Image (tube, rainbow, N blue to C red; front, side, top):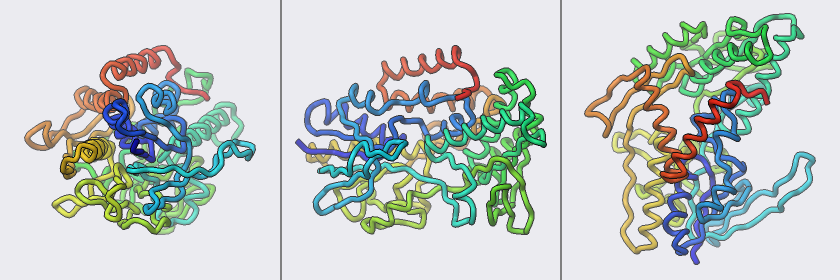
Length: 430
């Protein structure tokens, strides 16, 4: 039986392995394996909510091992460290526990077809001090680390264990992650008052968004950016546009013009790139963002047996721009890659990938949701905000649930999330 390995259980990887398992795996035509370094999947656009503490991985995550048992594929916990395209094998790093004891040794897996869906990481552009002093929200581990640090800071201020009575948070990067996190932090500071921290409130939280470009949300239409800026400013969040950071230290950021932005917590969300190790493999053709270059069929330029989907995939559009690293891109790529693998098994010609932009949305906690719809949904770009925008935002997550769980289990997962949200604390204190 032929073996298909999908490396990376993000939006693209998990949707791809689910589609393959329902067709080739369930029918016994192929052995499907998912490899991921984490045990739990969280939809990446929700990581800022994990960081703020308004959701947790237990109620909103997908356990890979349990999902695999239900959907006719295997799950391997591990991190990819090497690919041998000639022998068609991948190598996984050994796994250690918190005490340094080895749980699993280095392993080698054989494949007939490989799908790389490794995702992306924050791009610090070589800025000194960022790795040492800043939190990033490009993974579940990073989001949980920030959440723990946030709770510790809130407790210290509430108990009067520090001289000052304010918590300063500085976020570098005015994209969707940075703006959405800022709004959620404002909400969380108010929630803390009802969860054992009576001295805490949004008035004692000072959040700054630092954007090097001319405006926040540079990848989205200007009208969305303007509406988001107004909503953030109304909350008391400082929006610093046209401000470039040159260095980070333990007390904050140094700007290019020599200014300082002091902060107790620092978050770096300025740009993304594919993991550096992809280039260190010296196997693939890559672009400046470390993305693996692919053919129109999403097969890598160096091997037709290796497909690439999601943020680590580099494919140019007819207008000479790269397909953006978004959840909707990963979703569309996963569909195309899974369909092409099925067509290979059927001996049919492969289809080319065509990205369709359905618009963009920014969800600023409970305060505002703004965005635009375009592509197949409307004849041209249409600005939306308020309840309609929130409804569309929620529907995107629900579509992901259906793609991962199927219709019946997707509905049950959505209902479970609503029930959990109603019964659980609004702020996670663990």
